[in-house]
Length: 372
Length: 159
Ligand code: FES
Image 1 (cartoon, chains in turn cyan, red):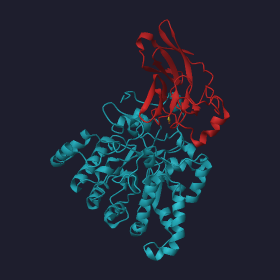
Image 2: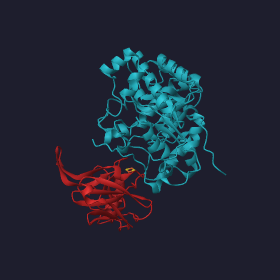
Image 3: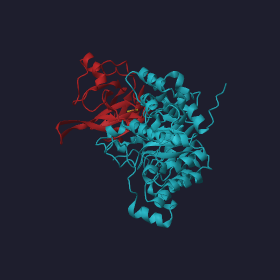
Image 4: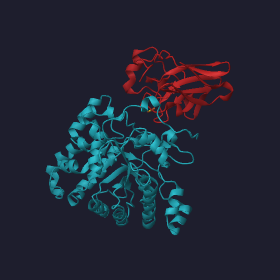
């Protein structure tokens, strides 16, 4: 593969526009640690294992025959690195280029590393979090991050959450949509307990051990790519019906990269069936949609884009959660949404909230001060 | 405006140069002995089009069989991979047949002829004339008339 050594910045004519008046928060930026970043942050025993055997599940992008360029923007490959491994390139192509006030990192390697042999999984996630602190958060004040945890060993995950929770730059706990069990089951509750105690939301990002499953594995990337909303719906249903939101009434869940428009029909169906079946789920004392509206947030990339944008507006109206939608670019993935173009997808009245204000509220981030 | 890019002998086939023309950024490509110049701004979401890969037309008569045209004629945007004809800036998207939502395009215009089995998309990137003058490669930035694409608003000039 030819890798462009040139750093991509947009043509100057496009970049020179005046700073927009409102805050821009990007809620889905993917850093990627290289082996040379992880190795020195492991104990000798785990280092040896990493060198000899690597990890059980390959992380993105090896998991699929994806679209071109391994599923990354072609211009996001740094010299001798991997998309998302280079802070300066992320500054150049994203933070500076689009005048992003705050960016939230989502280290997807946590998805696959969180399922290893328990101590090894915890060590890999710990090393990943250390790398994020030292190489990203310490060097770039605009960034926040998600705590990578060993999701299949929830007690160890809870320890990692407790360890990081004192650092306000970690603003959420990273969960994948694909686990060994539905994420509502009790064995995962220590993760939710630790997150709730720390006052941190859970960010559920598509992918993980079970990929984008319904029954079986998809054969095509197209299947995977547009199925995100369905895996997100099953994660939420599991958490809801198993009583997670009853047990942890303050817990917030951010559905990252799962679309939005499916949430309305899901709530219609739940609310319609619940009165008839409620004896089966005594842990739900109110209509299911109420829990969803109180606990769930969405990010925009990839938001459903119907031919007629008015249809998206109608779907959003049915959902009624416009104060819980966060802008996401998904940098450096190939389906990156430009923060300059994305606002056009949304009704004008919602743009300021979606592009930044909602995220500032959720993550307690300061809004941009605008000269009067 | 005329912009001197570089000396011809410093611009071998297969290479490209990105030049600044006032507020505009323009990619100049040398494919064989032909030169193309195209606006470094993707009409889709504003990606830096000229950092993308160039590629030839490909045709296939069936699984496992394909023929590549000899020269690179297309540039694929580095962001989402939309492809544009280097000569005209015409976009070509989609996996081969016209997606349902663009049927209007193929009905409206005679110029919407498929190329290499693919339907022209609705977007056109700006292209510019390039010529060689006393062994210097020169771009002429006076806007060329936009490629005639069906249902497309005038594509030249300012975005
Ligand atoms: S910005 Fe060029 S393909 Fe999307």
